[in-house]
Image (cartoon, rainbow, N blue to C red; front, top):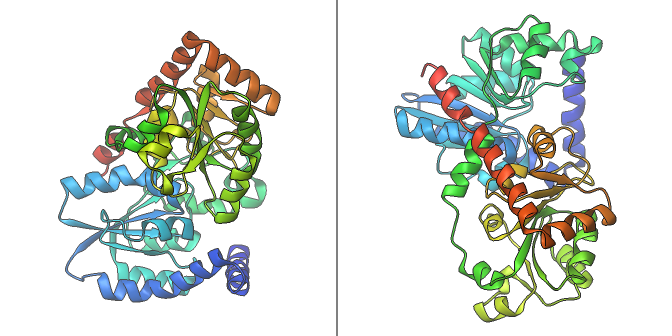
Length: 406
Protein backbone atom coordinates (compact mmCIF):
# COMPACT_ATOMS: atom_id res chain seq x y z
CA UNK A 1 0.00 0.00 0.00
CA UNK A 2 2.73 2.48 1.00
CA UNK A 3 4.73 1.46 -2.08
CA UNK A 4 1.78 2.11 -4.40
CA UNK A 5 1.02 5.50 -2.84
CA UNK A 6 4.67 6.56 -3.08
CA UNK A 7 4.82 5.40 -6.70
CA UNK A 8 1.70 7.31 -7.76
CA UNK A 9 2.97 10.44 -6.01
CA UNK A 10 6.32 10.10 -7.79
CA UNK A 11 4.65 9.61 -11.16
CA UNK A 12 2.42 12.64 -10.54
CA UNK A 13 5.42 14.76 -9.58
CA UNK A 14 7.24 13.80 -12.80
CA UNK A 15 4.20 14.77 -14.89
CA UNK A 16 3.80 18.09 -13.04
CA UNK A 17 7.42 19.16 -13.52
CA UNK A 18 7.70 17.85 -17.09
CA UNK A 19 6.78 21.19 -18.74
CA UNK A 20 9.77 22.75 -16.95
CA UNK A 21 12.35 19.93 -16.90
CA UNK A 22 13.57 18.41 -20.16
CA UNK A 23 14.52 15.08 -18.58
CA UNK A 24 11.08 14.69 -16.98
CA UNK A 25 9.36 15.59 -20.25
CA UNK A 26 11.39 13.03 -22.18
CA UNK A 27 10.45 10.38 -19.62
CA UNK A 28 6.73 11.22 -19.73
CA UNK A 29 6.64 11.40 -23.52
CA UNK A 30 8.67 8.21 -23.83
CA UNK A 31 6.43 6.26 -21.50
CA UNK A 32 3.35 7.40 -23.41
CA UNK A 33 4.92 5.89 -26.53
CA UNK A 34 5.88 2.55 -24.97
CA UNK A 35 2.66 0.67 -25.68
CA UNK A 36 2.54 2.00 -29.25
CA UNK A 37 6.12 0.75 -29.79
CA UNK A 38 5.27 -2.67 -28.38
CA UNK A 39 2.08 -3.04 -30.45
CA UNK A 40 3.97 -2.06 -33.59
CA UNK A 41 7.15 -4.10 -33.12
CA UNK A 42 6.46 -7.17 -30.98
CA UNK A 43 5.73 -10.14 -33.21
CA UNK A 44 3.46 -12.75 -31.73
CA UNK A 45 5.32 -15.64 -33.33
CA UNK A 46 8.74 -14.62 -31.88
CA UNK A 47 10.31 -15.38 -28.48
CA UNK A 48 11.59 -12.35 -26.54
CA UNK A 49 14.18 -12.05 -23.79
CA UNK A 50 13.66 -8.86 -21.81
CA UNK A 51 16.63 -6.83 -20.51
CA UNK A 52 15.89 -3.88 -18.25
CA UNK A 53 18.46 -1.20 -17.40
CA UNK A 54 17.72 1.91 -15.39
CA UNK A 55 20.19 4.03 -17.33
CA UNK A 56 23.29 3.99 -19.50
CA UNK A 57 25.65 2.48 -16.94
CA UNK A 58 23.38 -0.50 -16.34
CA UNK A 59 22.94 -0.92 -20.09
CA UNK A 60 26.72 -1.29 -20.45
CA UNK A 61 26.66 -3.98 -17.75
CA UNK A 62 23.95 -5.90 -19.57
CA UNK A 63 25.44 -5.45 -23.03
CA UNK A 64 27.91 -8.39 -22.93
CA UNK A 65 24.98 -10.73 -22.18
CA UNK A 66 22.80 -9.26 -24.92
CA UNK A 67 25.55 -9.53 -27.50
CA UNK A 68 26.39 -13.11 -26.60
CA UNK A 69 22.69 -14.05 -26.65
CA UNK A 70 22.42 -12.50 -30.10
CA UNK A 71 25.40 -14.53 -31.34
CA UNK A 72 24.61 -17.89 -29.79
CA UNK A 73 20.80 -17.94 -29.65
CA UNK A 74 19.48 -16.10 -32.72
CA UNK A 75 16.12 -17.80 -32.18
CA UNK A 76 15.47 -15.23 -29.44
CA UNK A 77 14.63 -11.56 -29.98
CA UNK A 78 15.78 -8.94 -27.50
CA UNK A 79 13.51 -6.40 -25.82
CA UNK A 80 15.48 -3.63 -24.08
CA UNK A 81 13.84 -1.17 -21.69
CA UNK A 82 15.15 1.88 -19.87
CA UNK A 83 13.74 3.94 -17.04
CA UNK A 84 15.94 7.02 -17.42
CA UNK A 85 16.18 9.31 -20.45
CA UNK A 86 19.96 9.35 -20.03
CA UNK A 87 19.88 5.70 -21.08
CA UNK A 88 17.05 5.58 -23.59
CA UNK A 89 17.86 8.76 -25.50
CA UNK A 90 21.46 7.60 -26.06
CA UNK A 91 20.70 3.96 -26.90
CA UNK A 92 17.24 4.01 -28.47
CA UNK A 93 18.79 3.00 -31.81
CA UNK A 94 20.96 0.23 -30.34
CA UNK A 95 21.25 -2.39 -33.06
CA UNK A 96 21.81 -5.23 -30.62
CA UNK A 97 18.16 -5.13 -29.53
CA UNK A 98 15.06 -5.77 -31.63
CA UNK A 99 12.79 -3.47 -29.61
CA UNK A 100 13.86 -0.57 -27.38
CA UNK A 101 11.48 1.49 -25.24
CA UNK A 102 10.92 3.09 -21.87
CA UNK A 103 9.62 0.98 -18.99
CA UNK A 104 6.35 2.56 -17.81
CA UNK A 105 5.88 3.38 -14.13
CA UNK A 106 5.32 0.31 -11.96
CA UNK A 107 1.55 0.66 -11.57
CA UNK A 108 -0.68 -2.44 -11.75
CA UNK A 109 -2.34 -1.24 -14.97
CA UNK A 110 0.96 -0.48 -16.70
CA UNK A 111 2.39 -3.83 -15.63
CA UNK A 112 -0.56 -5.78 -17.02
CA UNK A 113 -0.45 -3.93 -20.34
CA UNK A 114 3.32 -4.20 -20.69
CA UNK A 115 3.51 -7.94 -20.03
CA UNK A 116 0.46 -8.68 -22.16
CA UNK A 117 2.09 -6.95 -25.15
CA UNK A 118 5.73 -7.96 -24.57
CA UNK A 119 5.20 -11.61 -23.51
CA UNK A 120 8.86 -12.13 -22.47
CA UNK A 121 10.12 -15.70 -22.04
CA UNK A 122 12.58 -14.52 -19.38
CA UNK A 123 13.86 -11.23 -17.95
CA UNK A 124 17.22 -9.82 -16.86
CA UNK A 125 17.13 -6.89 -14.45
CA UNK A 126 20.48 -5.12 -14.20
CA UNK A 127 22.04 -4.11 -10.87
CA UNK A 128 19.57 -2.10 -8.72
CA UNK A 129 16.25 -2.60 -10.47
CA UNK A 130 13.61 -4.20 -8.21
CA UNK A 131 10.17 -3.02 -9.31
CA UNK A 132 7.62 -4.57 -6.98
CA UNK A 133 4.63 -4.96 -9.31
CA UNK A 134 6.63 -6.01 -12.36
CA UNK A 135 8.50 -8.70 -10.44
CA UNK A 136 5.44 -10.07 -8.67
CA UNK A 137 3.59 -10.18 -11.99
CA UNK A 138 6.49 -12.07 -13.60
CA UNK A 139 6.37 -14.63 -10.81
CA UNK A 140 2.62 -15.12 -11.24
CA UNK A 141 3.13 -15.60 -14.98
CA UNK A 142 6.07 -18.02 -14.42
CA UNK A 143 8.51 -15.73 -16.22
CA UNK A 144 12.05 -16.39 -14.91
CA UNK A 145 13.76 -13.25 -13.67
CA UNK A 146 17.53 -12.94 -13.23
CA UNK A 147 19.20 -10.16 -11.28
CA UNK A 148 22.56 -9.39 -12.92
CA UNK A 149 25.54 -7.57 -11.36
CA UNK A 150 23.39 -6.74 -8.36
CA UNK A 151 25.05 -5.43 -5.23
CA UNK A 152 23.53 -5.11 -1.77
CA UNK A 153 24.49 -2.99 1.22
CA UNK A 154 23.42 -2.96 4.85
CA UNK A 155 21.71 0.42 4.53
CA UNK A 156 19.40 -0.54 1.66
CA UNK A 157 15.68 -0.58 2.31
CA UNK A 158 15.49 -4.40 2.09
CA UNK A 159 17.53 -4.75 5.28
CA UNK A 160 15.86 -2.03 7.38
CA UNK A 161 12.94 -2.63 9.71
CA UNK A 162 10.68 -0.36 7.66
CA UNK A 163 11.48 -2.27 4.45
CA UNK A 164 10.43 -5.69 5.69
CA UNK A 165 7.31 -5.92 3.52
CA UNK A 166 9.03 -4.49 0.43
CA UNK A 167 11.85 -7.04 0.76
CA UNK A 168 9.37 -9.73 -0.36
CA UNK A 169 10.10 -8.54 -3.90
CA UNK A 170 13.48 -10.28 -3.63
CA UNK A 171 11.69 -13.66 -3.52
CA UNK A 172 10.36 -13.02 -7.01
CA UNK A 173 13.85 -13.30 -8.50
CA UNK A 174 14.71 -16.70 -9.97
CA UNK A 175 18.44 -16.27 -9.38
CA UNK A 176 20.77 -13.50 -8.21
CA UNK A 177 24.17 -13.05 -9.84
CA UNK A 178 25.73 -10.66 -7.32
CA UNK A 179 28.99 -8.75 -7.38
CA UNK A 180 30.46 -9.74 -4.01
CA UNK A 181 30.30 -11.97 -0.94
CA UNK A 182 28.77 -9.22 1.20
CA UNK A 183 25.71 -9.19 -1.06
CA UNK A 184 25.46 -12.96 -0.77
CA UNK A 185 25.61 -12.78 3.03
CA UNK A 186 22.97 -10.04 3.26
CA UNK A 187 20.57 -12.03 1.07
CA UNK A 188 21.22 -15.14 3.16
CA UNK A 189 20.03 -13.22 6.24
CA UNK A 190 16.70 -12.90 4.43
CA UNK A 191 16.66 -16.64 3.76
CA UNK A 192 17.52 -16.14 0.09
CA UNK A 193 20.06 -18.69 -1.12
CA UNK A 194 19.47 -18.77 -4.90
CA UNK A 195 22.59 -16.63 -5.26
CA UNK A 196 25.86 -16.87 -7.18
CA UNK A 197 28.80 -14.51 -6.63
CA UNK A 198 29.59 -13.81 -10.27
CA UNK A 199 31.26 -10.40 -10.14
CA UNK A 200 30.48 -7.39 -12.29
CA UNK A 201 29.77 -7.75 -16.02
CA UNK A 202 31.09 -4.23 -16.49
CA UNK A 203 34.65 -5.61 -16.44
CA UNK A 204 33.81 -7.75 -19.46
CA UNK A 205 32.33 -4.75 -21.21
CA UNK A 206 35.33 -2.48 -20.71
CA UNK A 207 37.64 -5.24 -21.94
CA UNK A 208 35.51 -5.52 -25.08
CA UNK A 209 35.71 -1.75 -25.54
CA UNK A 210 39.48 -1.80 -25.02
CA UNK A 211 39.94 -4.50 -27.66
CA UNK A 212 37.75 -2.60 -30.11
CA UNK A 213 39.04 0.90 -29.25
CA UNK A 214 39.01 3.34 -32.13
CA UNK A 215 42.24 4.67 -33.54
CA UNK A 216 41.97 8.47 -33.29
CA UNK A 217 44.68 10.08 -35.45
CA UNK A 218 43.85 13.61 -34.31
CA UNK A 219 44.25 12.66 -30.65
CA UNK A 220 47.56 10.99 -31.55
CA UNK A 221 48.65 14.18 -33.34
CA UNK A 222 47.74 16.16 -30.22
CA UNK A 223 49.61 13.85 -27.86
CA UNK A 224 52.94 13.67 -29.70
CA UNK A 225 55.58 12.74 -27.09
CA UNK A 226 54.01 14.48 -24.10
CA UNK A 227 52.68 12.92 -20.92
CA UNK A 228 48.91 13.29 -21.06
CA UNK A 229 46.27 13.38 -18.35
CA UNK A 230 42.88 12.28 -19.68
CA UNK A 231 40.14 13.73 -17.47
CA UNK A 232 36.83 12.05 -18.22
CA UNK A 233 33.27 12.90 -17.16
CA UNK A 234 34.50 15.97 -15.30
CA UNK A 235 32.28 18.42 -13.44
CA UNK A 236 33.14 21.98 -12.41
CA UNK A 237 34.65 20.99 -9.01
CA UNK A 238 36.91 18.50 -10.77
CA UNK A 239 37.94 21.10 -13.34
CA UNK A 240 38.74 23.56 -10.55
CA UNK A 241 41.48 21.16 -9.44
CA UNK A 242 42.69 20.02 -12.82
CA UNK A 243 42.88 23.23 -14.84
CA UNK A 244 45.00 25.39 -12.45
CA UNK A 245 47.52 22.54 -12.13
CA UNK A 246 47.60 22.08 -15.90
CA UNK A 247 48.09 25.82 -16.45
CA UNK A 248 51.19 25.74 -14.23
CA UNK A 249 52.80 22.56 -15.65
CA UNK A 250 53.95 22.90 -19.27
CA UNK A 251 55.56 19.43 -19.16
CA UNK A 252 52.12 17.80 -19.50
CA UNK A 253 49.13 17.95 -21.81
CA UNK A 254 45.46 17.60 -20.95
CA UNK A 255 42.50 15.93 -22.65
CA UNK A 256 39.35 17.17 -20.95
CA UNK A 257 36.02 15.42 -21.57
CA UNK A 258 33.36 17.19 -19.46
CA UNK A 259 30.27 15.31 -18.33
CA UNK A 260 28.04 18.20 -19.40
CA UNK A 261 28.72 19.22 -22.99
CA UNK A 262 26.90 22.53 -23.30
CA UNK A 263 28.11 25.74 -24.88
CA UNK A 264 27.96 27.58 -21.55
CA UNK A 265 30.07 24.94 -19.81
CA UNK A 266 32.56 24.74 -22.66
CA UNK A 267 33.04 28.51 -22.58
CA UNK A 268 33.46 28.37 -18.81
CA UNK A 269 36.23 25.79 -19.23
CA UNK A 270 37.93 27.80 -21.97
CA UNK A 271 37.84 30.90 -19.77
CA UNK A 272 39.93 29.11 -17.14
CA UNK A 273 42.61 27.82 -19.52
CA UNK A 274 45.87 29.76 -19.81
CA UNK A 275 47.54 27.49 -22.38
CA UNK A 276 46.58 26.79 -26.03
CA UNK A 277 43.46 24.68 -26.43
CA UNK A 278 41.21 23.38 -29.17
CA UNK A 279 37.81 21.68 -29.25
CA UNK A 280 37.70 18.23 -30.79
CA UNK A 281 34.86 19.25 -33.13
CA UNK A 282 37.13 21.92 -34.64
CA UNK A 283 40.50 20.21 -34.51
CA UNK A 284 42.79 19.65 -37.48
CA UNK A 285 46.15 17.89 -37.50
CA UNK A 286 47.90 21.27 -37.45
CA UNK A 287 45.82 22.75 -34.60
CA UNK A 288 46.10 19.50 -32.64
CA UNK A 289 49.90 19.68 -32.73
CA UNK A 290 49.85 23.31 -31.49
CA UNK A 291 47.36 22.74 -28.63
CA UNK A 292 48.17 21.78 -25.05
CA UNK A 293 44.57 21.02 -24.09
CA UNK A 294 42.09 19.06 -26.20
CA UNK A 295 38.47 19.59 -25.14
CA UNK A 296 36.15 16.73 -26.10
CA UNK A 297 32.90 18.47 -26.96
CA UNK A 298 30.90 15.40 -27.94
CA UNK A 299 29.97 11.91 -26.79
CA UNK A 300 31.09 8.39 -27.59
CA UNK A 301 34.86 8.93 -27.75
CA UNK A 302 36.01 8.89 -24.13
CA UNK A 303 36.33 5.12 -23.80
CA UNK A 304 38.78 5.10 -26.72
CA UNK A 305 40.59 8.30 -25.70
CA UNK A 306 41.77 6.92 -22.35
CA UNK A 307 44.30 4.80 -24.27
CA UNK A 308 46.24 7.97 -25.16
CA UNK A 309 46.87 8.98 -21.54
CA UNK A 310 49.65 8.11 -19.13
CA UNK A 311 47.21 8.80 -16.29
CA UNK A 312 43.46 9.34 -15.96
CA UNK A 313 41.10 11.35 -13.81
CA UNK A 314 37.51 10.10 -13.51
CA UNK A 315 35.13 12.86 -12.48
CA UNK A 316 32.09 13.08 -10.24
CA UNK A 317 33.84 12.42 -6.94
CA UNK A 318 33.09 15.87 -5.57
CA UNK A 319 29.35 15.63 -6.20
CA UNK A 320 27.12 12.99 -7.75
CA UNK A 321 29.63 10.15 -7.27
CA UNK A 322 32.44 8.96 -9.49
CA UNK A 323 31.75 7.77 -12.99
CA UNK A 324 33.23 4.76 -14.78
CA UNK A 325 36.62 3.92 -13.25
CA UNK A 326 37.07 0.56 -15.08
CA UNK A 327 36.67 2.37 -18.42
CA UNK A 328 39.98 4.12 -17.72
CA UNK A 329 41.77 1.46 -15.66
CA UNK A 330 41.44 -1.16 -18.41
CA UNK A 331 44.18 0.64 -20.36
CA UNK A 332 46.69 0.07 -17.56
CA UNK A 333 46.87 3.67 -16.35
CA UNK A 334 46.63 4.93 -12.75
CA UNK A 335 43.30 6.61 -12.01
CA UNK A 336 42.68 9.68 -9.84
CA UNK A 337 39.24 10.11 -8.25
CA UNK A 338 37.46 12.43 -5.83
CA UNK A 339 36.27 11.46 -2.33
CA UNK A 340 32.68 10.43 -3.15
CA UNK A 341 33.66 6.88 -4.09
CA UNK A 342 32.52 4.71 -1.15
CA UNK A 343 29.62 3.07 -3.02
CA UNK A 344 31.79 1.93 -5.91
CA UNK A 345 33.32 -1.50 -5.32
CA UNK A 346 35.89 -1.27 -8.10
CA UNK A 347 37.11 2.11 -6.83
CA UNK A 348 37.42 0.80 -3.28
CA UNK A 349 39.30 -2.27 -4.48
CA UNK A 350 41.68 -0.23 -6.61
CA UNK A 351 42.30 2.25 -3.81
CA UNK A 352 43.34 -0.62 -1.55
CA UNK A 353 45.55 -2.19 -4.21
CA UNK A 354 47.12 1.07 -5.36
CA UNK A 355 45.85 1.40 -8.93
CA UNK A 356 43.57 4.25 -7.93
CA UNK A 357 44.40 7.39 -5.93
CA UNK A 358 41.95 9.58 -4.05
CA UNK A 359 42.33 13.37 -4.15
CA UNK A 360 40.39 15.56 -1.76
CA UNK A 361 41.59 19.06 -2.65
CA UNK A 362 44.03 21.00 -4.80
CA UNK A 363 46.93 20.11 -2.51
CA UNK A 364 46.45 16.32 -2.69
CA UNK A 365 45.78 16.53 -6.42
CA UNK A 366 48.99 18.51 -6.93
CA UNK A 367 51.14 16.14 -4.85
CA UNK A 368 49.74 13.08 -6.62
CA UNK A 369 50.26 14.56 -10.07
CA UNK A 370 53.78 15.72 -9.18
CA UNK A 371 54.79 12.17 -8.32
CA UNK A 372 53.12 10.59 -11.35
CA UNK A 373 54.87 13.06 -13.67
CA UNK A 374 58.30 12.77 -12.05
CA UNK A 375 58.52 9.11 -11.01
CA UNK A 376 58.27 6.83 -14.05
CA UNK A 377 58.58 3.65 -11.99
CA UNK A 378 55.75 4.71 -9.69
CA UNK A 379 53.58 5.64 -12.70
CA UNK A 380 54.17 2.31 -14.42
CA UNK A 381 53.56 0.23 -11.28
CA UNK A 382 50.27 1.97 -10.46
CA UNK A 383 49.11 1.53 -14.04
CA UNK A 384 50.05 -2.15 -14.04
CA UNK A 385 48.00 -2.70 -10.88
CA UNK A 386 44.96 -1.02 -12.46
CA UNK A 387 45.13 -3.06 -15.66
CA UNK A 388 45.68 -6.37 -13.90
CA UNK A 389 42.73 -5.71 -11.59
CA UNK A 390 40.39 -5.43 -14.59
CA UNK A 391 41.75 -8.59 -16.21
CA UNK A 392 41.47 -10.52 -12.94
CA UNK A 393 37.84 -9.57 -12.39
CA UNK A 394 36.54 -10.33 -15.88
CA UNK A 395 34.42 -13.37 -16.68
CA UNK A 396 31.08 -12.63 -14.99
CA UNK A 397 29.21 -12.61 -18.30
CA UNK A 398 30.39 -16.11 -19.20
CA UNK A 399 29.48 -17.47 -15.77
CA UNK A 400 25.98 -15.96 -15.94
CA UNK A 401 25.34 -16.97 -19.51
CA UNK A 402 26.44 -20.55 -18.91
CA UNK A 403 24.21 -20.80 -15.81
CA UNK A 404 20.98 -19.69 -17.47
CA UNK A 405 18.93 -22.22 -19.41
CA UNK A 406 17.88 -20.52 -22.64
